[in-house]
Length: 263
Image (cartoon, rainbow, N blue to C red; front, side, top):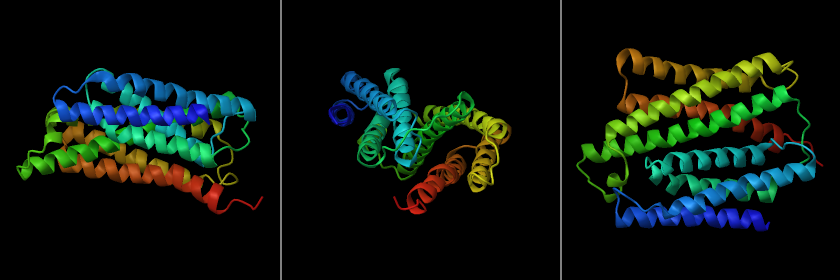
């Protein structure tokens, strides 16, 4: 509990420092947030490692997976923010990671699964893909908010904390490209290593994941071929992310929490 509590506090401190830095100087917020953010990420990861050691295997159930995706999002935000780009994203991401970790601590500990290296590879690729594309979805929301404010000539202070519109859009598509590559690897390893999809109740998950993959791929192709941007990019990104959430967490929620046999 101590590690979890400290990690949550560090995440919230990092978010608070970011808010304070943006208020003081939106164009160049202080980097004081970076140390608690990195500490929160490290302790978050340690909490999972200790839980896996105690249970004898990797826990990939609903709350654990949610927490791991939050960890991945926080790690990516700290990495990108340390380079001076999109640090303001941590105002949203770090509280999400703290909430996911809290949920895992309260409800998520189950007996660990002994997975062979192939299924572990598939699972870790999936978690990385979801974390990366979740960041892309947040960037899409920020892009939409920025465009909307500029169209209405509402020059809010928070706009100055974001990169210029073109740079934000470029970062969005680069993030989608990385997430798309990870999602492609996830689907390929699932096709190669996961046996008997029908017996494992994975058909709906696979179909929704493939539909999401097609949307992300179509968006990247449209960007390359037709120069898609703005509202089109936002709509496609969010639609694809909704399908991905339903594929992974929707199926896990139903199978593990709703249809779970009584203990």
